[in-house]
Image (cartoon, rainbow, N blue to C red; front, side, top):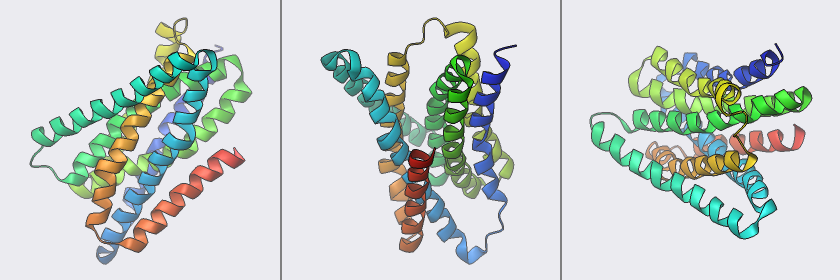
Length: 250
């Protein structure tokens, strides 16, 4: 029964992504839709880049470089560039396979995939932390929950406004969030004795490469299409503010 607590922490942290998806139920006036989409895209841009630069990369580098500087640096570079190359290939394949889909829909799917990859190792980390020390696990779970909510927005908003289908937006967001408790379950059942901090750090650096690439090559150009400069600034500032709160007060 000692696994119930850690599994619950990972599940709540992961599925908090769905909370962000409920933003699609807001009634937005027709004349404000472009501003709203731009704001949400800019907000998710700040969150994805902010998490990568202030959390995933520095924490992972700290782990990898601690034991062996040269080996750690090589693994870090390899992990980041593997993520960049992998997502570029995926973007190319999605573009060819979905030529009839909107850029917003493609962006939502890419965000879902990136955040699934992000949530999976997070689930492992949250579960193992809670398994060893419930207090530490709760602290980590709360921090993850707060940044998973805006991540849910980054999936749901593009998909909803591309398809006008709330159920699809919620489903895709749920799939992304469920990767976290799935990671926790697999960590316990299959990999508990094999998962190392080094391996988790490499996966998170790979994810950082993916998230930064999506942000620069897909999200940012999409925000500019709507020509809503004030919405871009407001969304970006709010995203940065949330990242700072997460780091300094949690």
